Image (cartoon, rainbow, N blue to C red):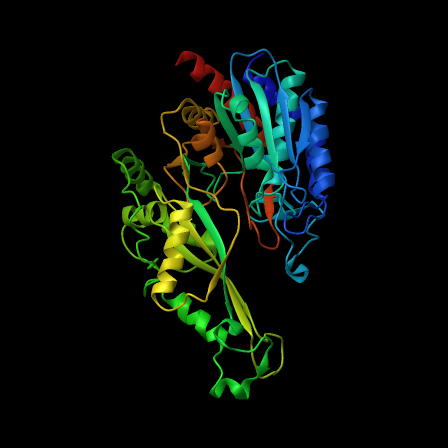
Length: 466
C-alpha cells in the first residue's frame, strides 16, 4: 500500500473522524481547574486501546493530572515517541465567546470557509485527535512503518509533574526511541507551514510584596493613611520597573551573560527566512499595529529568536471593581515570565532576579515558583527534522523553517534528558489560542491527518537510508 492510498482512506473516513474529534472537544479538560480532565484522559486511553496499543495512566503526584502512556509494536526496526497534550486553558469571559466554548460548533467564516470553534481545538486537542485517528487508519490498513510510544499529558498548560517524572522513571526504555514527533496546525494565515527546530524555555513566577514584611498592616486600611503608611502596590511597581530598560528589554543584572550568539547555521536559516518574512502579516495575526523594536527583517528575527524577554503577565492588588473604595492594600502580586534562550539556565536566571532585587533594596519581595521549561533545540539535519521538511514538500508546500521560536513546551525532556531528537509538523490553520473564539479550519484538520501519515513514511525512508 502506498501513502496515497492512506490519504484516500482518510478522505473516506473523514465524516466519522470529524464527528469523533468533536466528541472529544466537547468534553472540557481545563488544566487549571481539573474540569473534565479524568474523563478526557479515559477517552484518550480508549482511543489508544482501540488500535491495539498497550496503555495506562500515570500521576506524578496525588494531585497531578494523569499522563496517558502507551506502546504499539508493529514489528518495525524504528520507534517514534508521540507527544501530545489533552489539557486546555480556562474559557475566560463567556460573554466574549460567539459560540459555546465546548460546543465544537462549525460555522462559516470569510475568507477561511468552515471553521470549528472550541476551546482547545487549536491548542492542541484538535490536532491530538487528528493524530490518533490518522494512526488508527494506518494500523487498520497495516501501513504503519514505525513502532510507537505515546506520552500524552494533561498538565502542559500548568506545568505539572506527571510527564517529567514518567520520563525520568522510564528513561532507559524511552531513550531507545529513534525520534519524537508532535503534530499541530502549523500553517499561517497565508497557508505557509511554519517548522521549527527549537523552542525557548519559560521561567514563570510570582513576585509578592506584603505590607507586613516592612511593618505595614495585615489587612487593607483606609487610603488616608497612605500619608504615613507604605503602599505595597507602589513598592512592587517600583521593583518591577527595575527589571527592564526603557525599551522593555530585560535589565536584570547578569541576565545576558548566559545568552549564546546564534550559530552560523542558525543565521543562514534566519537570512533565508527574512526573505519571506512579512512583518505586516505577522502583526495582522497578532492584531497589533507595530513592533516595539525597529530594524530590518534579519534584525527583527534575530531579536525574536535569540534574545530573552521579560514579561509581566498580570498584577493583582487592592480594589479593582466598578465604583469607589479608597483603600491601601495589604499586599500586591505580579505574575511574570522570562523566555530563556540557549544557554540560559532556569535556576541561574531565577537567582539573578532575586539577587537583582536584593541589590536594589527589595529583599522583602518574595518569589513564588512554578514548574519551568528549559530551552530545547535539535539539529536541522537530524532525520526527524528532514522528514518534517520533506513531508511538507510532498504535500506541495515550501515551508518556512525557523531555527527557534519563542513558544515553550517540555521538549527538553526529549533532546536533553532522553537525547532523542524531536520534530514537529502538521498541516492546518487555526487561531485565538488561549483567547475567546479559539478555532481551527475544518479542511486543514483533515489535511493534518494526511500529513501525520506522510511524516511517518518519510521518517522511515530517511532513517533507513541514513
